[in-house]
Image (cartoon, rainbow, N blue to C red; front, side, top):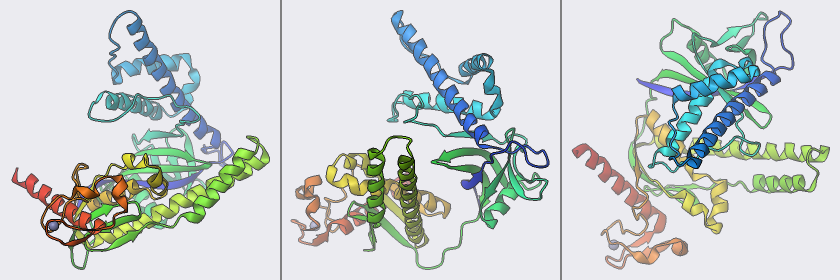
Length: 412
Ligand SMILES: [Zn+2]
């Protein structure tokens, strides 16, 4: 038994009307879109104010150090609200939450250990099509409308139709029940992806890990470009074939660029482009979910090298394959799945030269160092003469290093 936080995404269907036949408030498109707009407005205005204030300090010869916390931002928010009365139409906790996001953005920027950049304005090209509502006093819940159908209640905004499986509906109903302490809805994020709307519930619940039958192995995983991953037990996970999807995406992107923006032909091309884009993402997610589940089910220990994927992306020969087969998503899925199933998961540091070391004698072979030598798939150790497969050798080294790290932490 384990207390976990999980996210549950359900599709929601806003209506065109304001109220249903019984006079209940329904969430419509304009309400959701305007709430997203208000959040964006608050972010931009507060950021603008902070930027201007910093400039003012600099021009008068002071350091541009401004304390940005909840207290100082609340003053800004109150000012904005009195100047712009339309802001009161949006859900109050969503206004607070976007401000908290801005504060964390600044905190991350000021933390030197993180590579975060200065917060940017939300624009058409850098949009923010979401808002978050905190569940206070059960104001986010599942309730029956007067027709007898289950609907989501989104605090002040009203009720809204949704779709999900029976299992998850039961979970959400448990979350709304006050007498059931095992499941709790913490907050909900409403987001818009292309033309579809989703609600992402953050749920705190008790999870019992599934009992895993079968032999348990210790596995090191080498993430590569030509293959998605190579395990130390000589298993290979091939890259997904996404040729058709990319061909169609390129075709409709081209077609979009050849027509006038906003015209009928442009919109049709855009619709098809979005369709193929979502298909690609869904296909990849499904494949990764299956692959990672299979690995986690059969293992008791997993070691992965925390590869420098951003560095790889700069190489033009590797980047196309990487864009299609996102190895970072694969790694993240592997991490959270192993946490859920109580499998030990270790990240080996980036600097560890896993490909160059011979796993038999430990000699480092510098001849295969660097991206140019990526062609060499097999090599013979100059010290002991063993023939190595590049990826399998690397994965064995990663496993050894990972086990070492685990022992090192327990000794301390
Ligand atoms: Zn050797």
